[in-house]
Length: 162
Image (tube, rainbow, N blue to C red):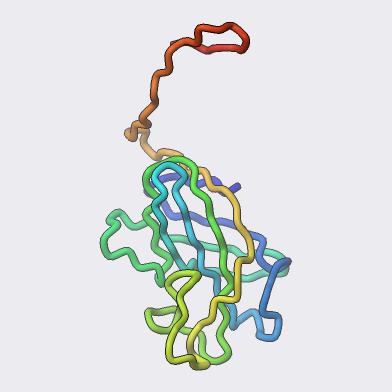
């Protein structure tokens, strides 16, 4: 599980090399597209992290951006609000030619197929890994909505009251 804090940059060590898909190209021809899915509201963010691929894992860095508008997935920018649990999925993207992580040269989602196909266009190879991420509040100002349930009439299980 990745532990993160809202409104800050994130660094994560994620196991990618054990499940590498396209082994016909060098590590320098691989980048990873990360999909974040919020458990509470279902919102989705994508980002290509700054990364350093090692023997079994990849060191991934994400930059916090305060405004959701203008978020640049090609520049490792994430917003990741509200605080809470998020799922993450890491997709392997490979290039045959020059690696350029930019609009038109790198897929924006896991289903994105760039046209026309060329050596300088990235291709999503598939899902490498997935997991959970806990994003904690930085300053404690966010509020979570809880619903108060009525006490059960039967006594066949434990009830924790108000």
